[in-house]
Length: 423
Picture 1: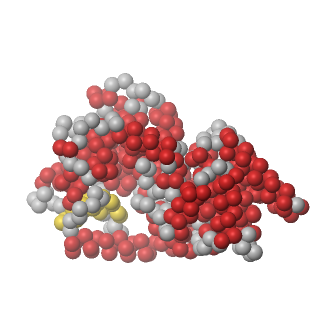
Picture 2: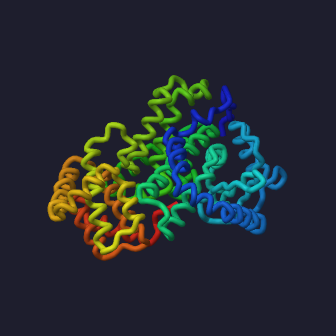
Picture 3: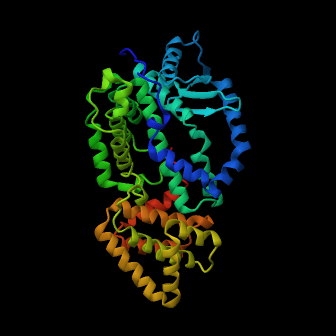
């Protein structure tokens, strides 16, 4: 492993953090439904954290300088690079899975858990990236917005609107990229980060790996065959995408300022790097809110308003939560206009829905059209079930948008099976 350098100055969390991570975190915590759920989870989360610590103390190895100086020195190096002064308890659990996570404890201690397979497969520089990533979550206090727990509770109780649930998943993906940037500060080489993700994907030790640049071709192929099917419902970005985001940050002015002897001349200003990262995340998250210049946004919102109203009325009863859900994926103005049209002439409203769907099908990428269908699916699931009439309408809307039937069936099955977590 090359010598690890200390940054030329103290890392600025506002500069390292992905801008959209911070932006979405503020919006989500300001939302009443999200803040209420977090408050309800409060005591239970603290109890589960203590329970997890007890489990680790009983069944895993707590790393100390004497027990495992190799692992301890790497964690200590990551803490020194990040100027992380909070107490960290590090546990290695016996597992053949490639896994790592961190959680805060009530006394302020950060508990980091890694599997034995991770320690065996990753080399020292790669473990530095991993430790930096986990500490990055702690630095940015990502645990204060427990996305996985919130999505799980919402799936069972229908607490979140479809738009808010998708926004929470979008934030979770941004948060992972922010944490990756802290990992990059520790390993100081985007090539090292790339090898970490390749090893996580394959489980292969380094002796079986050669040149890693071809890994990007796998992501390009994914975009052609899958688009957003495996994007909008995931909490983590796809691994090849995370490689690209790390490379972007390594080419930024700020990374060059921190490590002037490593980086050379920066390719991107800090603003360009953050904008490029947002565009990269858009490949999994085609939400028009990510793009200031999104085309045909007015038509999309009209389609969501009309199709959303038709959807919630299809089972003969309309809940207040469903009406609010339609507004959440469109706008108040579009929903009001759609309501007036449907009340005046329902058949004209249905015809207009088909017309707009075909308009969007001709002009928008498949990923964006799939995102529209996902929003409508989550709207249909607000009452914790999707009726046959709603399923038929979803297929009709997908047909207008030219989204394949097989894809719709796959997404519906995953939603009903609770696979939106996919961590």
